Length: 205
Image (tube, rainbow, N blue to C red; front, side, top):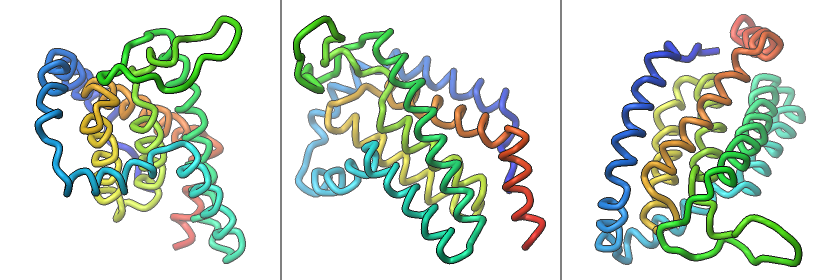
């Protein structure tokens, strides 16, 4: 298993970028309106569903079953950790999202209010759920399959940026989501049981 780079340095850089993103949120959101074009609409339309919770969870569980069926324990264990990372990061993202209560750039509600007290569905912009999910899963698979790290992180970045393009999130929303996803993934990968289980596959190469 490929060990993550020094955590403090990485998160110092992410914090700096997030601070800059907060300062540029309104300006970038204004620019995004003028970036719209059919070709980009098509690309974003294809990538956007990948970041949804159902798609990622089904993918991880399917890979876990495939790894079990083909007796590929490395793929099976990585996929299970990816699913756990997805779920854990999602809980953190959900809690922060409704504590912060930030309105989305387009002002459109994310759901429909039912009876009884609940959170306003349009106040759920920060952090981005898509960014949190895709980066949590990407970080797990990138650590276990280092050769796929760049493609996985590029795909995750494209999906996250697509949320800004669609005016569903600000830049700081996706930066915060990416940070949460990567942090949760690294915490899981650093757990003694998970580290030992995945390290065993490296020794068996």
